[in-house]
Amino acid sequence: MPVVELAGVNKAYESKVAVRDLSFSIDAGQMFGLLGPNGAGKTSSIRMMMGITMPDSGQISLFGKPFERESLQRVGYLPEERGLYKKMKVLQQLVFFGELHGLTPSEARKRATDWARKLEIDDALGKKTEELSKGMQQKIQFIGSVMHDPGLIVMDEPFSGLDPVNTKLLEQTLIELKEQGKAILFSTHRMDQVEKLCDSICLINKGEAVLAGRMREIKSRYERNRIIVEFEGSAAFLESPEIAEAKNFSGHAEIRLKEHGDAQKLLHEASAAAIIYRFELVEPSLEEIFIQTVGGKADA
Image 1 (cartoon, rainbow, N blue to C red):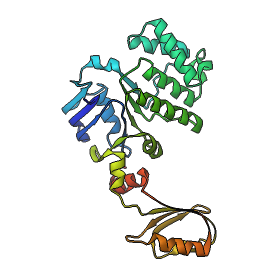
Image 2: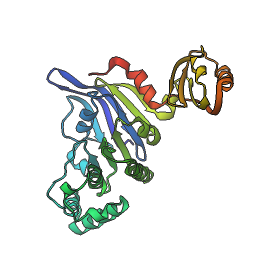
Image 3: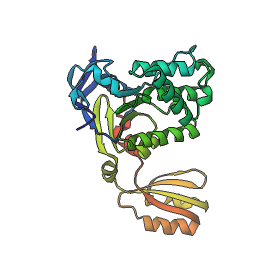
């Protein structure tokens, strides 16, 4: 039974169609990426899942039942816009969020403290929000979205404002929550995170799903014609007739072969021109698939 399911959902604002016939589902223990260019309908879809707006047609189900507000007690939501009270101290704020989700003040305080320790911000609990960095505020908002132990976690740009160290910490936390059986949906522009973390994706453009399914199955549809070369010496081999496109970043080259291009022939040419430290035939990245699928069809 899916934790969340959208079936033929449509939403329009005046003359603009935000979401058109959108369907997908997320199971327990699954991490799901909702992707798309700016204006594609990602946030509109999330807001309907959270009951902030209602679909014009179609159905949204949570935990096996048609949408009802009581089910939101089992959902954690991290919006893209920060919703913290600037003058309130962090612990006081998190206890308040916990109470809104039905926790007692003492239980909310304990969970907030435990989560703050886990995310390495326990020394900020006595500070006001306005005293903290954007990254710290993002971690506080994340704690507020998960401290009531939701079965479904919905996040809009969860890595916003985080440096590489804290990004890695949040990634590991999400993996742990997934292993606990949580269903996790996040929307982000960071394709590298989606590629690392997500089991399945739905790519939407102009409100419609244009690519959906399990990550491994989607990537298997695309030709393995990308090559990464790390080298020292002449880059003359990048002019090879086997190559359709090449980018050279000071000894790190990313290459796309022509259709039926010969990788072995290219390796021979590269070896004759330079010292080769790495020559790897790779599948296309999710970012390349994204660009290839959406291309110039995205809204401005």
